[in-house]
Length: 326
Image (cartoon, rainbow, N blue to C red; front, side, top):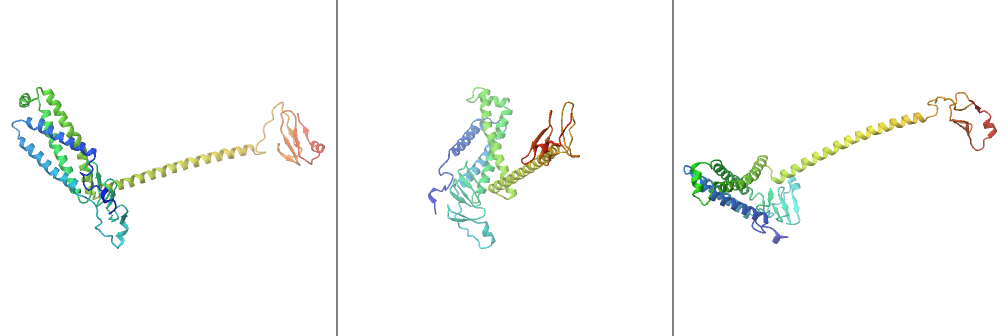
């Protein structure tokens, strides 16, 4: 199969730096819990209950971790394309050279087609699909439970660190003062507190999509489609608003243009005569000023009559009908 040697087979192949960071943080959190919390639990409290709960979720989560990391969720092309109408939902992967089922997707990071692809987990270094999804869900559930147990017992010690039984345990330990112990206890609680909100959010999300019976990838595609439709509606609404504004502006300009044309049309108004001004009067009855009469253009003037004579018109004849009115 093309590119077989480049495919990532499991989560321990080509380990990424993010995976090392997660492993180190989890190891530090476990060491702090068993060093600063379990030994200082009160004598009247059954510490084996805390240890038992913690170890139960830890062991189950560890088994789920190895299973989700080692099981290869690859689609080997064992499913054959049907001949009915459902074949239209199938695709062909040129990289893996197989027919992809409707829920199969090629992961560019792992360089393989994953059956019932859910998502690629960078913290595990592998893809989560139909073959290892339930192991992934159990892992997330156990991690959340571990963090709840760790937060509960750490918070119990922080609240009751002033009790006599706690003071005696602290004084008898390698820690000389309560302040140093309390500071370390706060650090011990800080790591699971941050992790709890992250992991519990992931757990709640997978419970939610489990109720909807969709995968993470399908949910992302649906949200992307919804967002694209929202953006499309916003653009259409903005275009409609702009079109209305442009229409109003065109109406306003058209009205202004009509008003200007009416103002400039000859005969639309007769300007009042002012004292000391002379106007050329036309001999024709009801003839407006500034009009052409027989090739003669008559215009108003502040002092004398101005007459423009076109070619081929007798000047003397043109001047004959003009009267000067003071």
